[in-house]
Length: 502
Image (cartoon, rainbow, N blue to C red; front, side):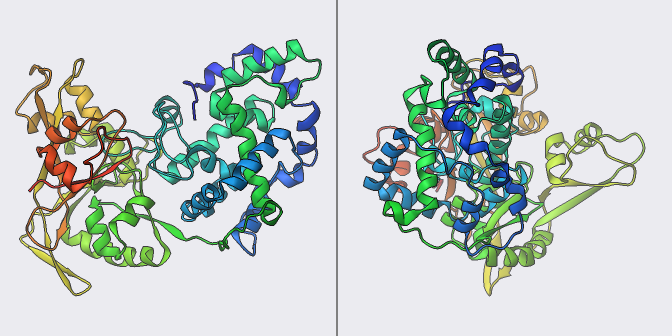
């Protein structure tokens, strides 16, 4: 998705778009799609009973009457590439129910649930050359504008639920901007509202009554909208186009669970019995082995295992962590509390599910946890003994030009005081290019033996071998061998790596 640094405030003053987008929506092929608003009132579908998820999705389709030779061409392509459709559907299973729920909350057409298929084939670790990431393919500027957090630990663009929320807000904004014309809104999701506005101006100068299909848009966008509409036609009537969709029940395959203390994928696997690989695919927003509630305090787990997690997590957490509670008194503020405990304000807000900076007297504020000082060495989970690992992992940040202490602290989302303490430095300590700055991280918490366990790391855009090697203090041969990278000259953004620090 190439959203071309869109900022809504700027869009609202693009007079060309405002003047012409109204007229274009009234013409030809768009009109039949919006003549009956009852079929697009998807909020009324919330909590209704459906035979299966496809029935639910079809009930919220709004573009059935739109036809074009371009849609026909995309249908032909999909008939020849059925595996693309089937693979994408298989990947979508853990997420579709949640996506439809978000669309219904915002009263948006159900066809939009298929946009991630066009964008990424429902691959949460997908990256594009324009640095777009996740199933909705947000680029960094648009992600930041719509509240998606991005740092070394966590990328909200890959978090399926958080990015879906952001995408529904973005699409709603585009729909309002183009005066209710969904085809223009969808096109702008791909190429940017400014480009769509220019195409509208150009079409109005050439045609007396232009339709959407007369717009001169980038090649990718001209394929993008008809591809989405073609997918919707296939879902609406699979047999007509030679497809057979697997039955998906209209129910949650996964549930959200909340957590208050840091955990890692290995420990989460121990608690739930779910493989680390599946857990990573369900929670792709995390870039390292650590799952920190200061980044995101909800997880997606399979239904059955979600119940097991709730049962075991609280019990284990009380043993592993030393929890601190601050009772708010007169004169307190989040800023003051963050200074007392040396934690970030955003971490306090996330851990306590606070939507604003407002706190009140006698309110109990949970302080992000530290590992307990207890002498307990192990705990038993499901009749298996696990050691409580208190060792930290050191990651080395390679200093680049224009780096400073504040910038590095922001990148790793750590308090500046902690960063300086780890490096025996102060704010005036000079940073030298290509030297290393230490970042301290929790290691895997529950381990079978006291040997160092492999770490998990997701490659970010533009990251090179030498950054990983120096960062974790390992050899290139070890990295290549452990990850079968022998024939891979360059690392690819989104790659999940195993890091052995033995």
